[in-house]
Image (cartoon, rainbow, N blue to C red; front, top):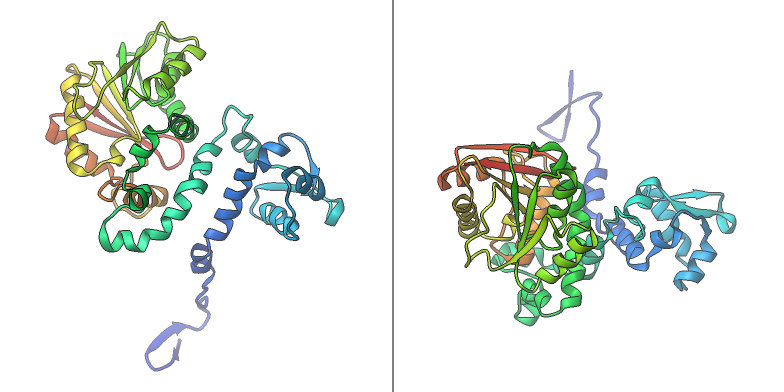
Length: 354
């Protein structure tokens, strides 16, 4: 039996009524987002570390003078980003297990760098998403200064290193998962293209003692990688090479990796990088692209789809892609087989074999 709402909208008598809460949660999602980003900017999770503090102690140490300190801290409790024991002025706040691991800057698994960058750069730039969709033009530094993000970064060594460390934090889990999940036993050499701090080369060398690795990036980046490699005590098996991966041949290796590189570019440049990798690999070699690979139906990987919008904000014509997209590009370059290996969270390794 049905009843009619209005003139022609039948619905089951006991059907769940429409609920706007999911729409509101997404639409007002910038509220919890900025609350977290501000907490990272203030160093709240690092301040707490493994201790517990009252709201008054937190406010004093972080120099917070607003009447909303309790709203801020209790909001983070409601978001499951802080723990609280007690109530009102006597309450003490502490990190959750996850924030202690990932948002305390003293933790080796700290990922706050990417959130620091999101707060300092991306949060404001995303205000231009509507303009970006209408025009296809990037909304980052180039809109305000005439210089692209990379031009701005490479002009400031301190800011460049901060950016590289932010990328390292968010990539650590994916790179560790790749080192464990992919069978490197048949290969002897790896070249990480766009190697930044040398993080992936270091992880692979640590997990697979038979591998020799090269971290390849622009000359301005090379000293950053060299410092990281020396600090890890791996200079004998991990080296650096510098060049422009659009202008120079890639260093030859049995495996070529690209961690969050392909999505920075338009289709023409994606294909050029894939072809360069094919040319540098021996028969039987492999190209591994670590990316937030979008599911082929483009329905499930929300983070991958949002990252693709972020590439619009940053570069205009850059984009993230599906496994099928990657398969077509690689087969066109000459690769014979492509597989997708899930890693941590929304990321996967897209592997093409020569």
